[in-house]
Length: 240
Image (cartoon, rainbow, N blue to C red):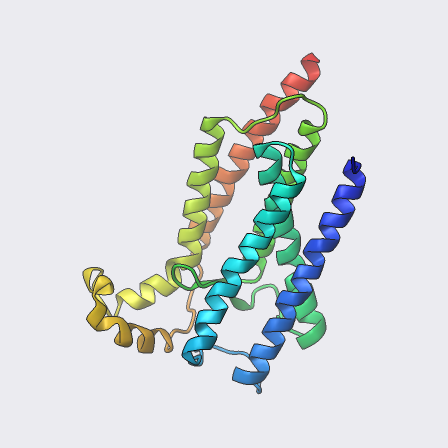
């Protein structure tokens, strides 16, 4: 059986490799769509390219889930390895973009973070902070899993973590959603007849302001959930 040290080394290398692949795709896309350099508003993608991008993101998640399922011994460990891989991948994604394109200009540069179900945007520092939080939590789970026979995240901890995560997602989607709701009412967004108009309006989107208040609240809630997990398992460990 592979030692914990070797697991960490190989999974870290896997995540860094994935990050370079992801960065390479961005390099190619920017050469095609933004030869003068990336900036908002977004340029339209040909139908099959935009669809490929969505499936590529989904495939990336599948790969991260796959490695976590293969390596983790319990549900908690599988979750820990997933968020660890995700976090390392995300951090090195920006490291490689900086090396390859000299982008982002700073940690406050706006970026598109995700496309499902709507566009997520935020300053680069925000996903980086989330990634370090994920690494910390993954480290706690993996550490206790190798010291205590059964480690699990309790329902109350899950509720806190999920609540914080949902608020975090809201923070990332806030600016884009606010922009879209200036042009359409909420019921109109579910109408097939406005689909083309919605796409055209979305191409005019330029980020204005990030909801730091929501982001901070979300981060505090998530850290509270992690703190509960750590304190509970640390007490179990001390009792022996």
